[in-house]
Amino acid sequence: VLPDRACYALSHRGIAHELSVILDRPLKNDPLRELYDISYRSKALAISDVDARLCPRYSAAVIKNVRVMPSPEWLVRRLEAIGQRSINSVVDATNFVMFNIGQPLHAFDAGKLTMRDGKWAIGVRAAHEGEEIVTLDGETHDLEEGMTLITDAHTGLAIGIAGIKGGRAAEITEATTDIIIESANFNPVRTRKTSQKLGLRTDASVRFENRVAPELTVLALRDAVALITELANGELEGYADRYPRPRRPYMAGLT
Image 1 (cartoon, rainbow, N blue to C red):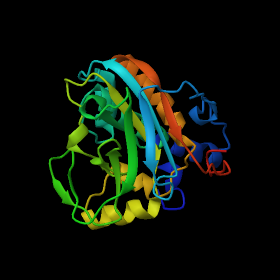
Image 2 (image 1 turned 90 degrees about the vertical axis):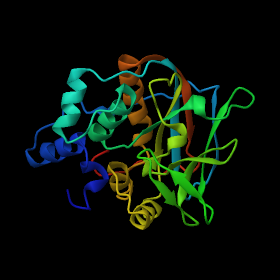
Image 3 (image 1 turned 120 degrees about the horizontal axis):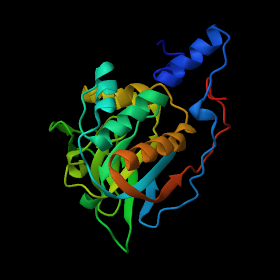
């Protein structure tokens, strides 16, 4: 997949779109042509302190009372077929959706975040000089000023390197019961530079550095919520969406 098509073709849906054009065959059951309503707002989550230059759009969903379990055999087989290791039902669901439609997602353990006045809060900010984070693989990364972080906005604690990798501080485990699903859109240049400087290239960073369309965030949430509630039970508590500067809805392969 070359750079001029990587914004959407790093997914099964994107390849199907290319084939439909080349073969002049209609793309049936296109998941991106279905409108999705996220007006059912979460009362337990606030998206605050988000720099729109770093994160043009941040969408999220809260799912409560999940049971994190091993994934069913069909999901394990499908992930293994594309070289992905099964982790658990929640993480596998987010990876499945990413490879299906091209939008990276991440799941945070909400119980490890601070709640104030009945709400968790997620923020996106630039790192401070000398700051560090321990990622999910157990590696400690020294951050440079300007690298983009996902934070617990109540405390400022870094819980992820935006668009690249989640942090240990809010890792999903078998003891997790409430989760926050992140489906965001991050600055492609910042993502690429941070990935290169840290030597940390991931499936998510490859997609974000190629300018994923912000319209995908809510569609990915739709699919992730449906799959997670099926595989890990749980109940959708609501959505949060911060998109201060909506762009004209154009993207090759989306419209």
